[in-house]
Length: 444
Image (cartoon, rainbow, N blue to C red; front, side, top):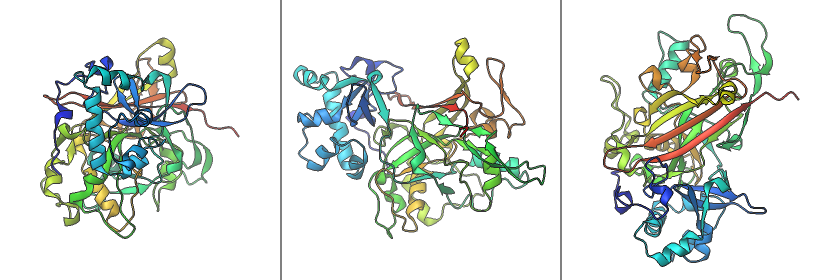
């Protein structure tokens, strides 16, 4: 579907919320991502909000005062709930109408009387606790980067890195929704069975020694489909609400022992971190690009995964980076160091293809379901999105500014994911960040 640009994308529009006009802000008026927050004040409850600069606009407060000026009872109700699920379920029409209304209220030429009313519902981001943006019933993780799949495949199958199905089907697995956590939540080192690949000894149970991050992008389902029905590829993007950052923490030594014959299990389900703000598909419209150009000789997508418009606009110019901050660096006042930087445009499969494939067997997707891309890696070593790739399974450790070396993550390490869209002629928008610090394994 061709992206539609309107007045909400005008790069010259500024907001009367001054912090939104800073060149480095992730949340200018052209973005307006949705999230769920709780004021730190005693007894405050969760509510839906929109990020604008360094502030959050409380939509429940806005709705209660009639400031959203919408005659739709479902939309008004959705803004008064403590999760994004009802708003997601209303579909793109309601979301676009709400975006336009918020843009009108927050732009710098809004009437002074309106500004006064709206400003009462602004709260500083520093004064809130961010929560998971939705009640996530199901979580699916894909494997959509051919660079990641090839790099990992070479570590285990040097002569045959890609399995025969990779270029025909978007590979994925069902993750664990209950262990999804919002950015900033500490992640405890998991325990599991591991076995030394060089020996025939019995496996041992204990803390993973190969804890890894995975730099990913997640996208939330908006309107879903009924059980037994499909979502055609040409309609798939209308079923996507927006995107966030995802860190699919992975215990590589546990994974190596357990993944055959049914795939990831305990190596993946102990924690998955996501960023709190959901950037809508409308905000991303200026940054759409062609789908990844398949190499000569690669098979074309099967008909149910092929749509001309998706091939033309299904890619996304989204820069991503992953940084690490060790305890020693933190104590010395050293800034986090970037380990990898990649671009989402390099994904072999588009978001629409992943979603259409997920529903192609009649699987019922529901509002608030989270689908993730899998590790986003590029062709260069600097664009590798996990330590498994970057260190060649630990054989080539990275050196930190403190002089420390890392094959995999150590206790106390903090991993920070960031993402932003940039294109000449448009205002830069960001996804915020997704952070997590490793705690020691439980001793009980």
